[in-house]
Image 1 (cartoon, rainbow, N blue to C red):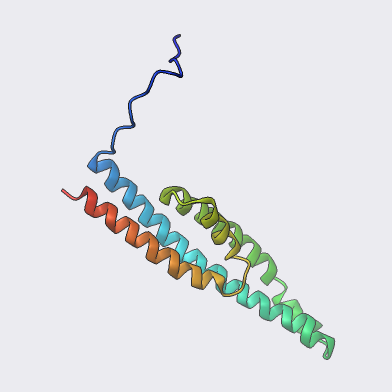
Image 2 (cartoon, rainbow, N blue to C red):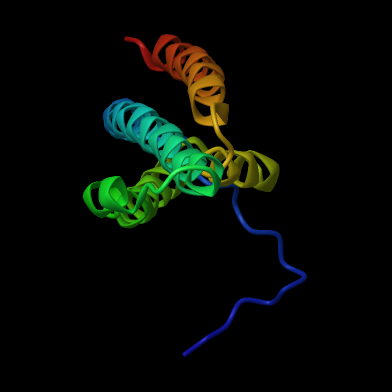
Length: 141
């Protein structure tokens, strides 16, 4: 088995073929669609969770809300599991788009800061669409 001398320059990576680029763009668009759906669902569940917490700790300080809380006790668990699925879609999109670490951190935090997922979803969608459209134009034949 031979190893290459680290001082020897290596050939640059070959540019992707048109078919490979189209496949990568198609996969990125699929990841973007999944991200958009989960960002909206996660944002809605987070808002519902905030309302549930306001009722439990705000209204609950004045009025007995225990009978109502039995029916909404599933909300924190649902948001938690939806957030986990959201994180998977964030990682999928982030790796396909090859964004930086700051973008990943922002997208992760968007699932736990109320309303942030809606705002960031719009921004991410616009930037991803622009990048994918430029790539499609570059590899159009």
